[in-house]
Image (cartoon, rainbow, N blue to C red; front, side, top):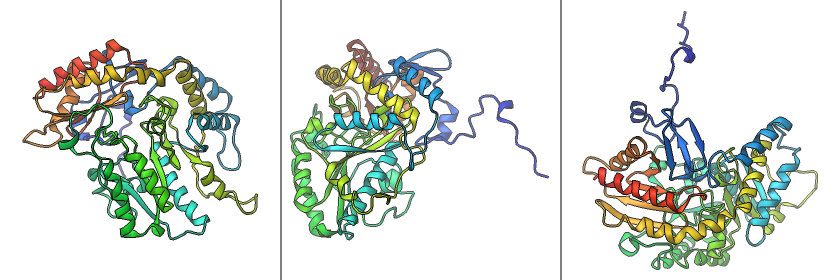
Length: 446
């Protein structure tokens, strides 16, 4: 007879059962960085220490933590309607939130398909692109083009078009037929650039080469992050996104902006598409739509793309795709309250106003030991540190540890790149505090 498992309740603080995502589990469980509370600009550790949040959680708590209007909206919604089926039924707040998001979006991005995460948003957008060409009689357009160093979540579609090697190498061929543009980053030409670099617009011409290689008749869509954040904050060269739009238009290819991170104020606008004056055919979003309080994602779709599906008998499903928790009532309530906060506190404009100070503070780290590059854009920054001789990523991990345990400061570490993207409510004094702490940390791991 098999021995019964020990109840987790009888083993307090047992860390072993939980397999953490994107985390070195053995190292973490040896010295865990735990969080037990949060408010506004700070997390709270189990020992009561207040940790300054330099990364808005995972790029998502744009309005700050545990904001009262969002908390109250979630509580009220849970008491009124906990769940409504997303297929063949819906609820009023889903339509209200979709209307609010569409009103914020540029151009004729007038329709919203809801899901639950950035990964789902990307896979949804890719499926819409494939189906769009299919319903228009161009079923040969099945190829999807991403970009080197791009991050588009962890679904099979998102990983296939993504260009971060570590995210791809364990999973085989993924989706056959995906191809990639070259990365827009060149340290020799762009190092220590604040904002969008002057060099690199010509890299968009790589799309013409891929069209020549594969033929436009086989290509459904190109997907890029306006700013590639998860790989270390790579701003687009001036004119690059505009050139991509023109090339896509020339060849009848859909252009998708992955704005899971850049949407909702990170770059001083509701969407990065506004900052760069480009209207893509779809925009994926997540994270900031609820300030991280409830999982939610979605895809904004241009009118022409949506209308292509609205053919045939009206009683027939137009797109065979969706999720059990699409437009979940709690997420919609959180989203509406979050959009109210962004509007009432003018947080997008506030982020734009803070940019010059943010850039100056970030560039103040230039010259510190092992700092190879600093790339601020919007209210975010990537800082490349030289790798240690005994292993890439070790210096970054040590910096993360030092921040949590010794400096009461949290930020992102991607290999040996440190990334900051604070909640949009950050004060000028807190910006100074962040970079003062970061300077001490960089010196400590030299």
